[in-house]
Image (tube, rainbow, N blue to C red; front, side, top):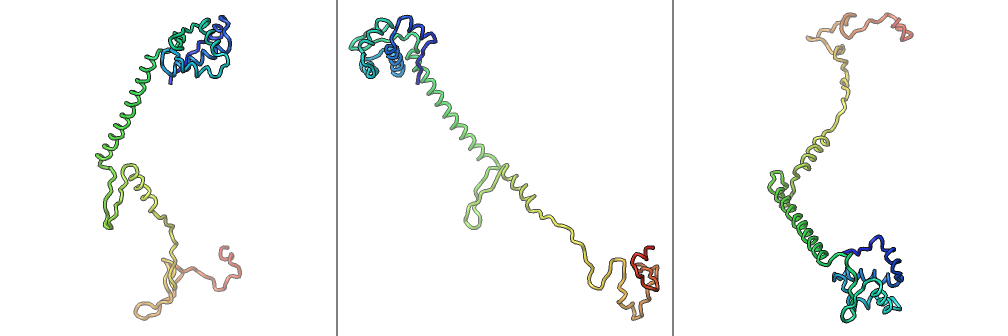
Length: 217
């Protein structure tokens, strides 16, 4: 695609020569048609007839453009439209060829980069491989970041936090410092009553306390 150039002093130029609105519109359409065809402003008879289809006084408009705007009649109904301010067809073709070559190099470079990336993955020792297990099925081994991520998840996810459970003494046993007074002494002798100084025994009064806090007083 190319562009049609309209200078910023277009309005002044049209007003200076007293060009009609229809003739101005016809000239702009002729510029667009010639730019798309890439013929350096050579408006052929068939193209002229197509852009004149929307005008009622086509021959008068063409004559006005020849007289006031520099159109030049050519053979078999063709006209040369002023082309000094437009881009030459040779420059347009060169630009398009450069664009096609640039796109071709870009595509080829993308293909080469993809091939290099696949080759580096195959040559890497951490490249993922599909191995056949004992059941005749293929399993994929994770590599790289995925392997590290799986290892960290396993290290954190498989740990089950436990809470300490308080130990409870068995039936008939007291704490670690106390003794079982119901069990007989070695040799069948009666076990003596523990004194006040023995571990695990507490001094008691002859009379029971009526109030628990009297022991503190």
